[in-house]
Image (tube, rainbow, N blue to C red; front, top):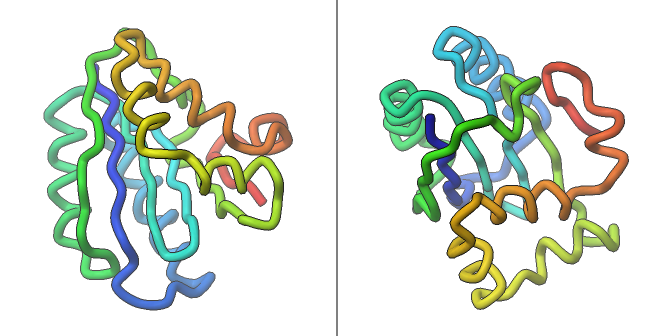
Length: 148
């Protein structure tokens, strides 16, 4: 099993209807492919973690690359894992708000901090990303992973 983290930039302004459509399609596809993960939206940028068996994750990534709603997709990390970090989420979702203190820390992550997280051999980067979210997100998220 692998975990894959990518970032991309929105090609246009995104409305609530865009997110609803992305999540509806992603959740159906991910359930079919046994993929779990989370999608973060931060001021025009997408950050997503996908986890599952290698071939389904790579097929999903190929489909994501073809999506014209975003551009400049960069895979930041792909790593082997024995267990899922998002086992209950077919596709979690969180809009990061730079006004909120916890979300602001995510915006201010430096390249050196990211490099340290990525180089952690036990997948600590994923744990750090999870901990960067508001604590109430993890506590109040439904099975589909929708967060306010």
